[in-house]
Length: 430
Length: 105
Image (cartoon, rainbow over all chains, first blue to last red; front, side, top):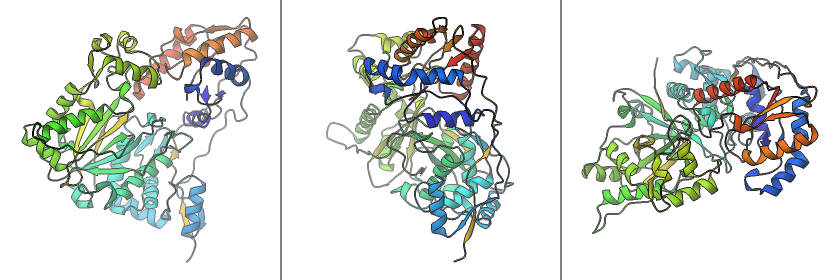
């Protein structure tokens, strides 16, 4: 059963699982905001007959087997403008003009990857389609990348295909999309930007766009069909940590050598708001930064999931972007990245009654904190009194700190993600 | 400028298609399971659906979602697969002829 707008997603899910003839019954309209009377009426008038039909009548395409395609087959011939228009019509592009993926251009990109064109790099959900250097290169050409970006893109696709990344779950209405963090020597080698306006300069936008096209064309996330963000998606974000960071970079924190080049795929559902902490007579800049980060965490949409833990909990990830001066003020005050995470974990708290309101009225599961305590998803403190303050994060480990952006600004940003964990791969140049 | 020949950006198919399970000839006298993932008001919709199906098919046996695991969250792919396997096995064990699932929005 689906609601209006999600039947295409259900059909695509059936196709990606090898069942193109999945039977679907569609409830009309946004169920979430309908009251009990509307729900009963809609089920009686529209849904119930479809359920009976789906259980008793075979679909038209039962047992059909889709053909496999030849990746070198010419799918269109025309001018650059005609090709852009054709790709838009096929929903193969993000609405911007594309560089025509000719065989010659794609071959040049594959050559830089050091891999065989048909090597299986990953099988990407939700469409469960195979990513190869060839089709990664096609999307990279379209996005305006350079051939030298191929090893980075291949590592990113390996990360996307890792179950830790859990790409299959990002089609949510909350509009989650992948971002890419580049670490190690490749940042300098490729000129990846880490400073002022980093996501909008250098090769970052083209690489981010390529990731977005790969998610669309290989992983099969089509806006409005299987990629259901209510307000859509921005172009992909590429980040790198600034060289003036006082702390070890993300990839070194996670066990890689400073000399290794890595790509990490994370997710977020937001970009934008970047408040600034100010030092005052009564509080240091570091102190204000910590308090501000706690307040930013508490503004997030999926707050209801933040304290959940255990195998039945939905995963969350929060990526904190600190401009270099903010990080330096914290380091000067004696804080490591781990200390900052621990502080936020300890001090990002809400009255239990406020958390319960969010859970009851804005969460898809429409439950209460007490019920989730009984299910073992929340810790016992969430079964306390309404005025008790509860820690909103399950662990300091759901926080990830990146130092980047303008080295002359005191700004922070909290990016909120869900369902996935940051997933890192080495970039191998052959 | 000469026309350009271009190739497809799509991924290659990795999963073999299979036929959907055979449909039931009638719901009368059959056993049907409700699978719920704990979200999107399934606790409201399934009882209504159950009542209407029983009106139409008095000998239909419906096993409610409360008889199956339905924990929300659990978004790790391996955990999701294992849960799906457990639920399918449980449905077979209970003699189910069909399942109503999804409840997506």
